[in-house]
Length: 220
Ligand SMILES: [Fe+2]
Ligand SMILES: [Fe+2]
Image (cartoon, rainbow, N blue to C red; front, side, top):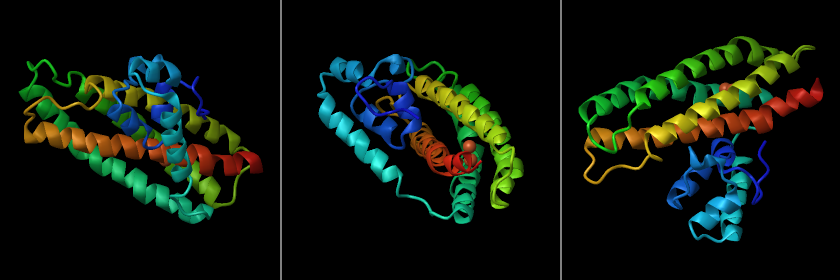
């Protein structure tokens, strides 16, 4: 996990801490290509003081720890309904909508070129990832653990990093979810939907990385 400090990388923070992406967008901090900057460098680049920014991010970290059931079985049910099912429903309409916006506005200079491709790659990755959790890892956990559970846990952590990289591609293609002046309703609905979906995905992975997986890593 990324430690929150002035030296932490903004791209890592954005893809690991629920709500951080929105704080960065509001402050004009880019975390796709510019994501290689440290928090201190990114703040200096925008003429922002580092202390209040860190404080805002620390508040998000504290809030993220309080949003899910404590017991393992209800926690897994919560992840399945609140995140896995929700991602599937939202990707089902976000991908055709992205395709429509890219096709209709392809010659607009702020068009989200490459967005559909980035979303399809993320959907394929997530479908395979969530299926492994649903069919292998979560059943092991529901049965109280397994002597080999470290292996699927390690693989899931690795796949979360892959998904975080794919999220950066979406941020890049949409210029940080910035709508052009006079954007049509489809384009607006697309970015609103993407903000919800990408925020959910960060929250989902954060919950697994920081709450669910460590429970079984320490027990194993
Ligand atoms: Fe999951
Ligand atoms: Fe996961």
